[in-house]
Image (cartoon, rainbow, N blue to C red; front, top):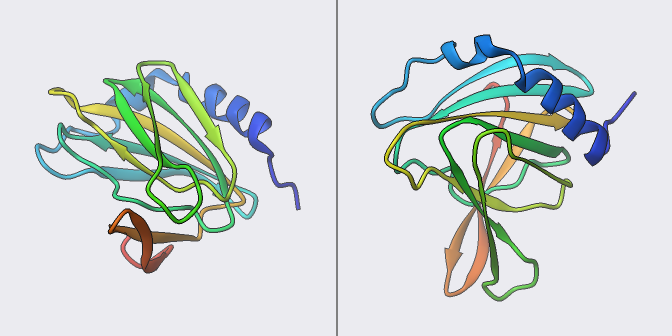
Length: 153
């Protein structure tokens, strides 16, 4: 098993995200995010996600997977949880060709706060199989459920 650590995962993501054909795989939907799994094996998965204006993932993690993402059209804003029980967020905005990588303990909410659609490429290692969903309640994150691959995504 070859699990990609954060820096190799970021490099692999950038290599795949350079494909100009990715810009044409999704027709922007006016209100719903769309996603397509581009590559998948036991150690790695790669996804293309389109983001209409105002869309958001909600607070979540990626189970045992570390990840990386880059914006290839538009702009995305990531709100990440800074650990601990009390509400503490870090905010970063990624424009075209900017990328960010994170470990498996990272909890975030990615949003398109702009007025135009955005498109991004996401890489995970090991392959993405679960995501834990969270709700922000009284300044704390509480688990809201666990999603599994093949059940809705």
